[in-house]
Length: 113
Image 1: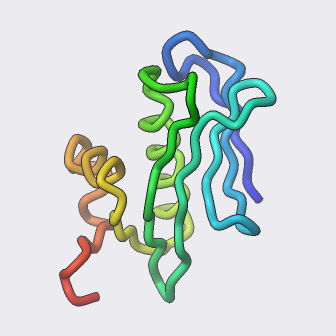
Image 2: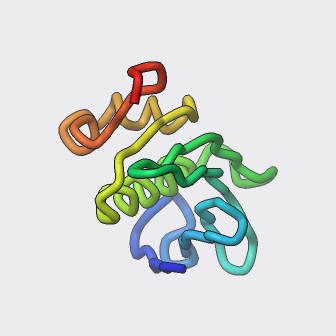
């Protein structure tokens, strides 16, 4: 499990944001203090990580935490040498907004991987 402490990140949370990859639960997690605020479910495939679904927990909506977690997960997949499959619409939107960073590492669903 990898873990990262973020400095100035999502609006209003700053140093209280911690992220990790939880392989046992097949998800990336973003914690604010001790509270689980956001998860991104994934499925590990040969040569790929399929990013399936982002969930923001009640009370944490509207602070950009999903984007922070998406970036962490995408950077983790790229660093692992695997390719991204963005089934999650939130992740796909993030990739489209940052094409220079992730498009070359992305296999879009339906492309016949």
